[in-house]
Structures are given as C-alpha cells and as structure tokens.
Image (cartoon, rainbow, N blue to C red; front, top):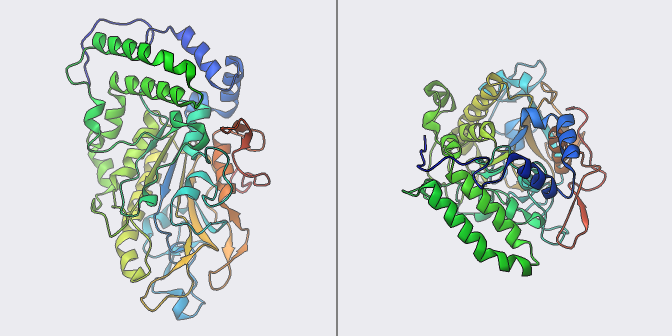
Amino acid sequence: MLTIPGKPLSGFCDGLSRRSFLKIGGLALGGLALPQILRAQEASGVRHTHKGIIMIFLPGGPPHQDFFDLKMDAPAEIRGEFKPIDTAVPGIQICEHFPLIAQRMDKLVPIRSIVGASGAHDAFECLTGHKRRGPQPPGGWPALGSVLSKMRGAANPAIPPFVGLSPKMGHVPWSDAGDPGFLGVAHAPFKPSGEGKDDMVLQGITLDRLADRKALLASFDNFRREADATGMMDGLDNFNQQAFGVLTSSRLMEALDIEKEDPKIRAAYGKGDPKNRNDGGPKLMEHFLMARRLIEAGSRCVTLAFSRWDHHGQNFNACRQDMPMLDQGVSALIDDIHNRGLDKDVSVVVWGEFGRTPKINAGVGRDHWPAVSCALLFGGGMRTGQVIGSTDRLGGEAKDRPVHFQEVFATLYHRLGIDVSQVTLPDLSGRPQYLVDRGYQVMRELV
C-alpha cells in the first residue's frame, strides 16, 4: 500500500465537498443536469455495475480461414494445414489449435463475416470503427475508450477511464492504443510502461506539499485559460486531476501489479514472450490479466495488442507457436470474467485490421485480404453460444450476414447504455457527430 504522510483532508483531495463535485460533474457532461445523468446511468445499469470493454487487437491481420472458418472442402492451396475440431456447441467447429476456446464456445460468439476493412495496416478501425483514410471530422475520430471517458467519466478518481496497454512495436501504427480525436487530450488513453511506473509513486513528498504545488500550478495556468481557444487547457486540467488522483491512491499501481493476483489465476493466464518479433509486438500474456484487473479497479475501457499476425510467409509454423498462447490467454480471461461475476458487465472483442488471402502463396503464407475477416466476442450480457455470418466456399467473400465493423461498435456502445441512433458529440467545429455512421445498428442477434 502507498502511505502518504499529512493531515487528513475533508471531502476530496482537492478540497471540494461531495456536493460541489457532483455539481461540477453535471456541468462537465455537455450541460446535462445531474438527475438526467443519474437516470441514464440507472437505466443502463452503469451506476451500479460499472460496465466496461476490453479490446484485444491482433496486429497484422489474423488468418480468418485458419481461426474460426476452416474450409475443408476447398482445394489444398486454400484450405491449409490445420484441421477443425468440435466445440461445446454442437455444429460449431474451429481450428484445432484453439482447444480451450472450443471448450468454452457456449460463452463465445465467433463472427466469420466482418466486412468494411479499409486495408490499412494499423489498429485505427478496430479502435474507432471508422476508416483512417476516409472522411474525418475536424479533430479526427475518437477511439471507443475516449468516447467512454467523455460520456461515462472515471468510475474511480484514482483509475483512468481509458487505459492503453499496447506495447511498442517496430511498425508503429500497430502500437496505437487509441487516439482521442476531436474529444481532445483530456480523453486520451493512459499508457503505463515499465519506465513510467516510477512516476506514479510519490518520492518523499507529503500530501500537504503536493496540495501546495497543485495550488501554485493552478495560479500559473489561470491567465492562460482565459485566452485558450483550443480546449487544450481543459485537457490539461483533466490530466492534472487524474495525476493527483493516481498519486494520492495506490489503486492504479495495485491494479497494474499482477504479482498481487492469486498465483493460481496467474498460472492460468500463463507466461508469454516479451520480445518483439520483426516489426510486430511481443506476446504479453500478463496483459490479459492486467486488463481484467484494470476494468475491475475502475477503468471503462482497456486496449491491448497481442503478438504479430502478418504472415506473408510460413503462416502455419508461426500460427502453431502463437495460437496456443492466444487460446490460453483468451480462455483464462473468459473463466476469470465469469468466475468474478463480470460476464454481464464486461464486453470483450478480439480481432485484427483485416483477414488473409484464401490462396496460400509460394512462401506458404497468406497475404492481405480486406474483403472479409473474423472477430470473437464474449461477455457483456450478450447472447453467446452462436456463430454469426459465413463466407463462401473459398473464404474470400462474406456470404451470409455480413457484419460491418461499425455494427460491432454499435453493439459495444449499446452494452454500455449508449444509443448510437440518438447520441452525438460535437467535433472541433461544433458540429454534432454520431458515434457510428447512420444506418449501422446494434446486432440484434446479440441483445
């Protein structure tokens, strides 16, 4: 535990009473009155249950036809080397290298027909639902976690509402944890790192001295705020509040410290490989566990990235190494969420930026294929134990029930009590923007 010497303060660490805090909170949410906010939270269950989302990005584009949509009737140059296995749900088969996921299929929803990929080699569409290369509002599209930070705020003042765990990679766009876009820096993800953890601990500074520094900082910034037209100062205010909340509580450090977890649970998640592979990312099994701990501690959204799936050559050898680890990490997260009673409140999505070519190339790899890809959903009170969508005989095009990226986002927002057909947020020009493009709706199969 973090112990900070100093005399007790009444109310919050900034001297505000709870009544004052609630008044400010009401003003901060687009002018909504506090009773409206509480009624909306009551209706969605957010106030009592603290709903959240974990986004697991698979950098490079995982091979959909080697994951959940094996094509055993296709020619050898398309069907590949892997065999399907039965799952806990009769009639659903997936790759033999996902035996643990197969055993939990009643708690899962594979989507075999994700469409709408831009073909860009980055995490942007998986984080926002929008194309980076498409039309952008002034300031750019915000990531899902930034939207939740704006609309739901912090569930606990010591825990950032949006945390990005994606590690550094040689191909930088895969490291993207989410950009706040037109919502501004106030809603950017908090990105913990090994080097930065020391900055979250007070080094011999008392609470009284910390409060004095806060007052001094406020006096320096006051005159600049009057002339600021960009919103940057408001963002800095938010960051300052978050920083003081982190420093005066051990809650975030404890959530990031997986050594505090039950050894049996840590063992269930397993150990990965911290080394980067070529331009891709490491295989950090502890991030699956850390994501659950952060959500449970108070985060609204946690994003992470696992390994590298851009296998233009030796696709099957690489997948034989990585699939079992992904299988273990996802399965442990499923069990953990259900065992802790979070399965109704925490939604999880696992996906990459696009799929892979049906035809295996001369290097025994699969190339980029934006036409169709796959995803895996679980938790969030969704109707699980079903497969959504299908592809044609060769796995090259969506056949039944194409599912657009934005439909998945509409569903995730819905699980947080956000109606994408009604809610808008103003961009930097003041123009209201819907969270998903008009016409894309909640996936009724899941709700």
